[in-house]
Length: 286
Length: 321
Image (tube, rainbow over all chains, first blue to last red; front, side, top):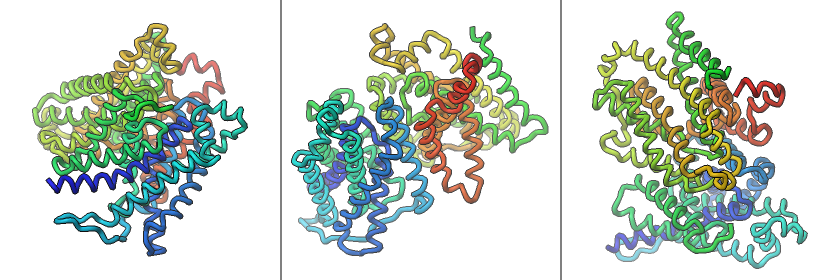
């Protein structure tokens, strides 16, 4: 019984990281109605970014999140201006395919550099032992970092002018432009933040599990599930839904083989979309 | 009438050439090249029914091919049934599955549907990897004597080649037949504006489920034939996500929504890919090049090669559909 409890607590901690990845997806989706299929590739880049930085500067890996986030913002701007900006007013098919093309390019380059063999970031924080179970320090630190970043985003979106501009554009782009907001700049900023969040979550995952350049795809799938659970354009809801998904995974893993998990997640995805098209937290604006 | 369309005869001539050129001089290596081209054309043509005609992206199209391979191989080797019968049954079974999936996920519109198709791919792969009768993650293989009913392995390879070419021709004819039918018009209406189509009396849910199911049939038959020819199947080669994506690149490159474009893109891309994969310098970058091509096509030439031809020679639209 306590084994299940421990597994669930682990699940919650990992779920916070899923939530962080999903926040990025949800932000981009909600603000510009673009489904960012580069998400998984960027998560993988975040993992390798952490790997490279940690190899160069073997300090506490969680301090290295900051440069990863900065690089993520820059990458986000590059992706926005090369592949998203031009298709934003075209039918959704175009942005799906263009972000998808960027995904292929990133994965292709990544495979050429790192092949598809597994890597890991060799950094451990001391954990807490309660009875027979040890909660690793990395899990707790990664979850805390995810929550801190999520709170920072929330403050940014609700308390600062650029954040308010992002929410205004998400609500009604034409009206926001009439109020003097340059929607192009806002969209680029929102996209860059979304990409940076993906990179940050990848960096956090890299301190928990071994990874390959293809690992991002699984987290992308989880991000989609979490995003529809939370409802579109609700970044903080995404964090909560991520924790829920982690809790669910933690609760079922003691009983079934890990290879079934994608099927459960997908089932959840379809059921939620069909039964609660606006997410389980009710009215979303999307 | 379909027989009045020049493209119909072009398709037949193309298929006949594909079938007989390698036969001349028993050119086995050319046959192996061309069978891959044929499979690319089959995948791109059937994907076109969803993306090009209906405007719904299916990222998991390869599921049909892989599942068809599994069902076909299971029937042909474990049960020892006739190859053609097994392949047809595989097609029917997979179409039926697609209809069931489709009725579930086609309630989703646009991008949500696209995401669900990724989910279907992942879910089916995870199911097959855990499914005992299909050998879990080790898959199934064809024992050598399973080729005996077709007169030995050497003849069996030629027979499967001709069958795959026939499936290719059927895929293109199916695309043409749907394009000139009233059903096809309904699909185009959904693509242009689904709400308006529904108001005008197109039963969008049924149309989408049917086309999703139809687009599953021939790829599944082709999968059954190909994996039988290759002699083995396992979850990672059957549900190769990459191939699913390359199908999209092929279609966009050739020109979505056109019969010839899908085939042209499939053929050209497959040629390019085999060149890239065998070139020592570029083999690592074939994904990058494919992605770059897709990006350029989406940004600058949404009509693909055929769209470009239409703009260059507007009258060609009447002949090359």
